[in-house]
View 1: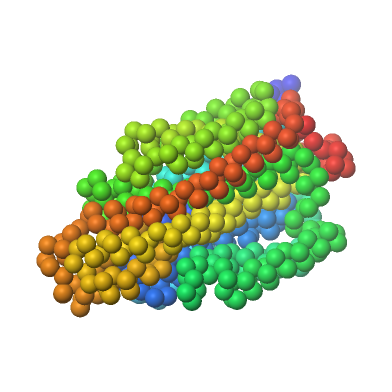
View 2: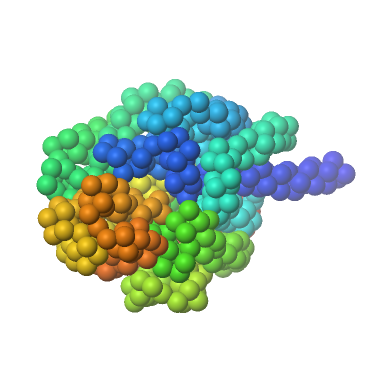
Length: 579
């Protein structure tokens, strides 16, 4: 009797150790997914790289997307390895890799393109560590907590992960102006502490399923995914006379080859005795519907962050007196209501979904997010901040309502032996959606800018003494360059005109063209045109996610569940459901 009581107390203590450590790991990984984004102006200045020089957009895009791509590519494979060799073992290794990569990033000895390439390569290594952490964190929690408490635990973990991407914006804005290397250095002491803690305290409590590694599946999935992500990356860059590269033979070839490899991957997985991607798990309605909803909501959220940063750094903050150098920090601060909404709604919705089920939360969340996007559509470009903050808060609350219950429903629906790969599959859809989202949002923005930017540039420049020929030539600048300038909080007018054209302009007009107000006012109308299409797309994605979430049916977590029980391990997949 005494030994049983001690065992229960030990188990109760352990679940909170597992929650706190995995939350630290996931938070660290997701902070670094966005901290680079807000620090890009300081990074480019620090390594002496001109972001608007021809060809340098490659380095900008891969500093942003490389981390996300490598994490998305590897997360399922590493979740499967966790099921085979032990989830804690794989998770702990992720802490080690991540910490080492962060330390290496702080000592970049190169400048210019070499310095940028160095950062991209070791950001990819950082992404490998992130994949180890993200792939196994949810499974470790599902193993540690009973089913009737998983919503709360996964909710805290999930919200920490998602809010980390917004916390990274503030940290990047604070640290990068001091020294851009600090954005990587901050992860080192956290990583060392988390690594030691994980190796000392985390225990293997999940069901291990020894199996052969599915090399054919791993290779076809990785190659297919990378080709599609590369195609998306170059699809948003100009090609020939087109403002985007979607009609480029290279981009089309990459996308077609990637899709073909995905088709081969599905065939390989269906025939494999030990598949890395358990396609049969999609027979579980709660899993398949929850994963599709995850993808759609993540598509809307991923692009939203980029659009808001461009809106704040490139337009609103300069118009309100902030220097371009200060805009990264203040963009992160002004977006805090979004993070606050997450932190409030996420844990609460996870707790209450354990009591009444996730269906209502996972449905209301996307509806609230869609309404926030509709409100953004009616917001003027030079908005009153109170209105902007309220919409951000509603969006954060709504996304928090969705994230925790949906993740708990997905994990509760999985057999114990498949929690690693199932959770990783869900994470893959979430991470890849962010990359797809960036491609979709940027493409829609570029399409909108292409229609109105040339005339706005011509009128604005000629009104300040620029000759018509020079203004007409400059009006054909690729819209993606304008977007990147706004994203970096950068006034490109002097750079684009060149010294000879600037020398022919009256001094008062030079001051006006290079001041804080001209460029933001110039792009505000084209920006409003472009962002409208992107937000309409996000509304549609959220509404579909709400319909799918409701269609999963009534689902309450079972009252008890043992992480080590095999009672549902031998059940046919189609019969395992929480509906």
